[in-house]
Image (cartoon, rainbow, N blue to C red):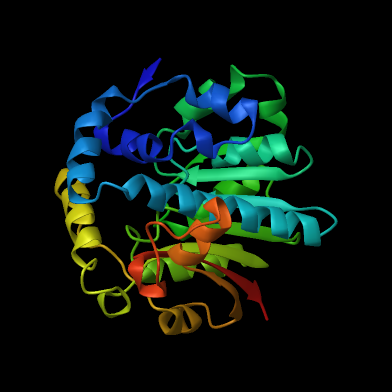
Length: 272
């Protein structure tokens, strides 16, 4: 098994395998040793006992929007996942939609992930590409995607999940400009003023803990008005708050009873 660092293991511990619908994704995750993330997981649990629910809701929202895209759109379709890490999302999509070409990009560990995925079956080589490239170097991103078969003339869905907090806003904007997607699924951390007063410190403490371990320079936060300016040639088609996601996933609002009780949202943007 591959032993992951504490921060790499954290989100996978939050999400658990129950977030995966396919055997292929679960088999991939079974190759990962998450032991080193358990202490960090417990420290975050002390801050917020139900943080698992945030990640499960987030992932539920992302996969449902992916399904919406591939249900409504026909023809050649491509999926680019920015900052893919060791997450199983690309492998899950590959299993659900075998004719879709998936491109995972991140600055490190993609070669390792490729070897793990190839152990599952040979189909992995045909339908998914794991590309190791610095997301801050936009010209390299374009060249690397193209070298692995991405076609800039064909429709593309671009996903930012679990990465928008860590990338500079300008880099996100440039990445979108160079890929020029038809749709974007964008998951983000809300501004303090959009979060209930009794919960605004939860993300501060959790992300502060992660930042201290990774030595991150900043944590990015957004509002919908900022997103409209950031992606000025795209329009917001759907907004998924934690309240809405929890109700969609569980049928209840046990942890997120109001729109401002959550600090993370998932939205869908489409080219105008």
